Image (cartoon, rainbow, N blue to C red):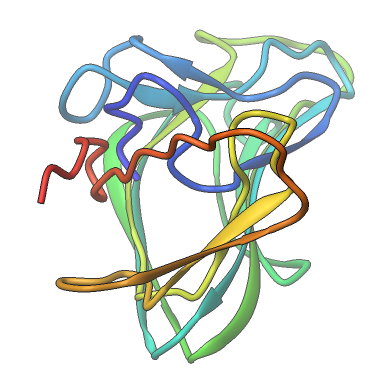
Length: 185
């Protein structure tokens, strides 16, 4: 996930907390876009969340950057409700890698602030998330369609798309590769 489509629609991202993360052009790691934590106040939180099912073992790796009050305001990386690592203060783009087995996971990038001081840009950024192959359900952008599934995912050849729900009109879908480009073949 690089957000180079300029949107957060490539994966089924979810948001928790006081303010949502958003697609940003604020000095991304590479390309034109990254994700930035929501603009939160003291004692608040902004969480970027992905529920996924990895079809094989591998590594989740990502780039992160923080500009926060050191030792008080943190970016946490959380897997299945367990804090795996955290960072605070001024950190330029840094890579982090976490090994996973095949199975279901909830990944969270959570920015939390303490109750008194703000420092730096008071924000965190995430970019270039690389994950093992998954068998996810993708939510169709328009509310009329309940959801669709792509098998296998990822695919390097033929695949099957299955829509769930009742439709009384034509559904137009677009397939994007992992860097947000529309697939033409």
